Structures are given as C-alpha cells and as structure tokens.
Image (cartoon, rainbow, N blue to C red; front, side, top):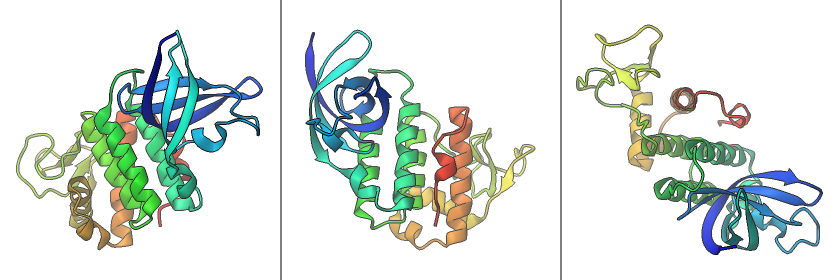
Length: 243
C-alpha cells in the first residue's frame, strides 16, 4: 500500500472495535481524510494523546481502499490539550472543528486556505489573549467566505446599493437596504454590523473594544447564517458558552 506523510488538525475521533479509533483529520495537502489509529485506546499505545481533537500533528499513513491507517504521529502543537482547560475556549474550538469538517464535504479535496485558517484560529485560542467568542466569529465569517458564502456587510446583498444598512437577512446573504428588505429580516445595531466587519477584516483593536451585548448580537447573526448554509444545526453549537 502507498505510504504518504501530511500534517493536519484532528477534527473528530470515533471508537472502533475494542482498542482502535477512526480519526478525521483536515490535512494541509490532502484535504479531509479518515484513518484508523490501531490500538490508540490502550493505555500502552505509543500514540497516546497525540490524536485527540484539536491537536496539530504530523502523520505518516498507509493509503487504504476506504480508510487509511496511521503508522506514525508526532505532535506539532497540542492546541486541544491547552484549550481544554478553559470551557469557553474549549466550546469555541469544538464549533470550529465541526464547522471545518462540515465545510469540507468531500474527502481528499485540498482545502489549504481553510486548513491555515483553522490552525491560526486554534493557535489564537490557545494563546488566550483574545475573547473566544470573537475568535470563533472571526473564524466562522472567514471560513464561510472561503466556502463561497461570504456575508455582505457593506453594500446591500440583493441590489448592491452602498451602505451602511442595518437590516440583516440570512437568506439574502447579509445586510439589505430598506427597499430590498424581505419579510423576516431583523434590525441590527450599527455597532454589531461594524463588529462583524472588523472581525472579517482583522481589526482586532476595534473588535476588542466592543461591548458584550454587541458581541452577543453579532454572534447570534453569525450562528444563524452558518446554520442556514450548512442546512442543519451543528451538534456543538448549543454547548457554546459566550461571555
């Protein structure tokens, strides 16, 4: 069987038989893959905690017909273990990992931009210098843009009329002008629209100065927008703790 190496972030693990696990990994070059880690659930396993969700690893694998097999795993950065000690960061990371898996609908399709975005998001969470909710929303906005679902935050999502606009419609794709405002659109505060724009462009100084209620409002819009485009809810999202 062909052997290959790649580095990636472990997205999810699933028990298999008595001692094995199936790991889902978003890799730098190959895209999303699934592989069997044999004996990893035994206390004597040489892999140990190297293949836990959120861990950035360098892998050697045997390519199989349906599932690959992990033959070597080395930790590059233990983001998952660092983040797990703080519940808000842990829940934010869980949403990021599930979102990355859902946005890579086909296996073995390279997704370099999403991979780099995920590594950067986990690194920022692990450093603990920025609010987890802001890191998460910035990741989600950019991940959706990479997937082709960019949120309109300046011009009207329907007619392109220059903003600022403060009505938000998930089906329309972002902010809408008064003439295009559809039934079901919600009013957004100017501060929430600006916060989303700051997170998308990486203006962390302005984003960090936002108020808690503004962050909750913006986060609610991002969550609704994400689930609309994924077509059904994330398992991890109800456990998210925003502070």
